[in-house]
Length: 187
Image 1 (cartoon, rainbow, N blue to C red):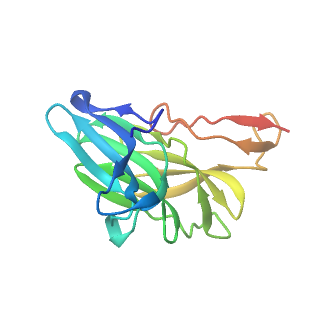
Image 2: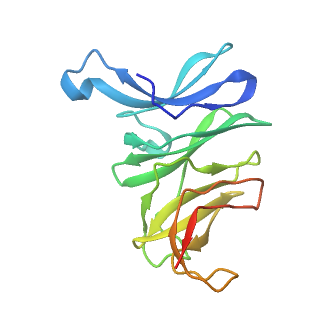
């Protein structure tokens, strides 16, 4: 079963998308496992992440998987997505044929651990910069990962250049490196 609204296209027509696989060795609800797949004419279908299996740093992938972002880069296709793990939600980055988990639990700009990552599509640019909506001590915030450095970009309560206060944030969209747009509502 394919995940509605999840497909993203990358190099050579490769498509990254969420799907549910049927595990014939299981019965009932456990037989349907969520996954992130990559498909293309040259590679066929490749499982990048499957619920119940282990990824980078021996991290078990759990449901739900967020919507993937995918772009062509000099390393081939680059994909960013979120997924639940036994220790909470995590951000994953697939690039150069390997998957990495982005560390985020303790961040210098956040008084407490990151408690939430949005299942929405992360912002992604061709240089590998990723932006994601997160919860920092239950306060919505947007974090950006660039050059292996995670930093807090904006959070609820912050003042805009117009002197208004940000009340809520949406999933970020990156338009090019170092630029970040987000949905916002002013108070």
